[in-house]
Length: 488
Image 1 (cartoon, rainbow, N blue to C red):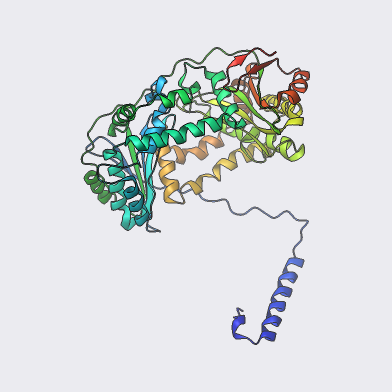
Image 2 (cartoon, rainbow, N blue to C red):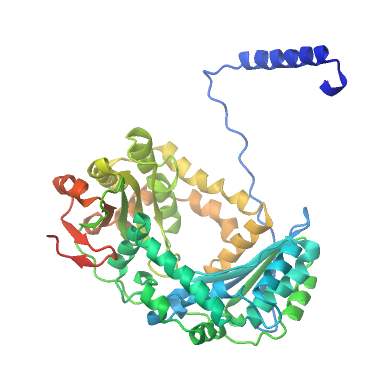
């Protein structure tokens, strides 16, 4: 029975409140807290159907209908990113160009673009990553067409004003300067440089020098060359009609000239692997050390992908993984450590690491090595672990299709990664076929213990001696930018 206390005499209201509390306490008292609660029902995976067509410009269009809410999400993905289209001496131009799309067009000022988005209750986001660029928004379904018109204006009519470029450049330079003092960024940059070198796109990063060299002409040239319909996949999900969406896109993008080839992702070979080494970047007085341990890994199209996902989940992908459980939960050396495979169209890195309290840097490194060897067979996987490694992936799938934003991101991934259109339908079967032997085999194959690059950014005066005493690997000292130098 529900009672509205506001309609009762104050004394009666108090009485009802006390009665409700007592009832709740009795219910709690009946719980047997010695029994482990049974798990709830696993979420059901429902992969939506979609239609796929091609616009007159050559851009691919994928539409997923979802009519439960009056929302629509659009993601325009461009296959290929900075690693394929940025000149080596103008690193950073891709990011600058994406940021500048909101700085004004031939029809609207930057303030006008911002005001129009606010009035529509949407925000048009643009970014260009290493291998994919994205422009998109989410809106109410009845505001989809005007939001699309704004996106088209930004994509086709951006003017890239000099004053705005200098402001965006200045902001970028400040960020690069600040990054030099951030241990996580220092570790990531040194790690990439060691694994891939300066001649591989995966090893190059924007610097103050390359960003300062970018001109407005460079931005205009990159914009003209990059945002081409021949490499675009447009995914729309929500309360829409596929035919109407196609007509709206054709009308909004009528000035978008056909053209643009997709990159081959033919990357150069990675440098020859070196013997296992600790690379120490000095960060005086640092309270913690940042670890980045790994080697170049496989591309996304490896046939071992499913076994690698299960193995990595158990090693460091899950919160309750072996690495995080031992180093964080048992030993208390860290707020959290993890491992991952970057994959990508080329040999993305395997990386394990995290922040470790400085005084325990040596002990943590011993544990990292212990568990990297453990997944190669020294610490056999239990049946429960193998089940957990698979179920964690199974149970993460339904939520990906629960919202319009999740749908466009998930479906776009199929096309930007060149996966089969049945990928998510097939995933449970593929993962279910992974055996314990598969998991150990890929750990031995891809976690090259003898050639690990062990990058540690921390207080050299505190950690170098103990790290050397572990005998795990010789130590080389790096400059803050990841360049090698002789230790004094």
